[in-house]
Length: 289
Image (cartoon, rainbow, N blue to C red; front, side):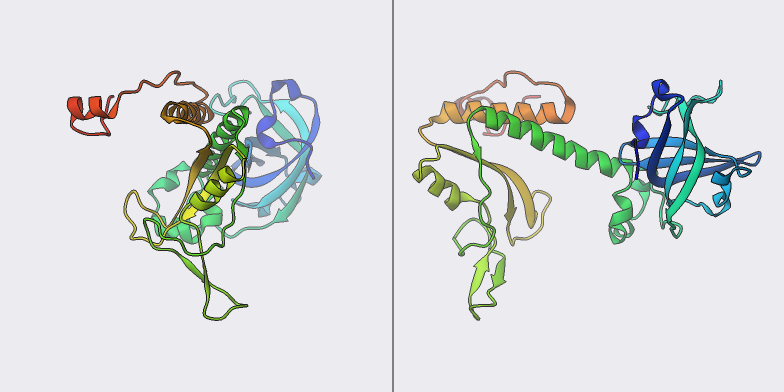
């Protein structure tokens, strides 16, 4: 359906005939010519539609969040109209064909970063719309980048990623279990894992040596700022390791997470003993900033 992502086009693409698909982020009418900001997962691209051409046949119908397929020629923007705030700000598409793939009702709140001031319950009721915002897209991609970077480091240290079961027998841990009734065995229940603790210990007994997993944990406890029903954690287990070995691996994982988020390595992480921390700061979690 498309040949390019909207956010990928640059000045070097001028003269190319391309097809892009996306949502209408904004519409502007100037002197009979329609300007659209077309948004997809990669960014925003300006579309120019001349109503006198076949591409403009339905231009009067197009509104915010309509889904379009646009074919046209990439051309440099006229002098004085460059948008330095956009990676695609030096080019635009002169539309030759515009297909409305789907229409849209007016969204209940702006689908841009100004929506941060919108009532959160409204955003959550329309989560599928909220996810179109740049801030939400960046959050998801940031998380993916962190996971990708951490996985690469763990793989390089000979850890094996293993997905452990989500339906288990109830085991005593620090919180209450979420329970799942069994259809085949009435009156009996599975539990959702608070952590993969037992499974990773079984893997060590089984000789796997080094295991990791970006694990989903579920705990039925009262919500607080640092307590959630469901959360993700980097879960790690190693055989034949001492405290320094564990600290070294954790330091690599923390550095990888920062690299995945920012592209910058934090380098060596200083460490102090528990005894030194208690004597100097009176706590085992000192703020050394």
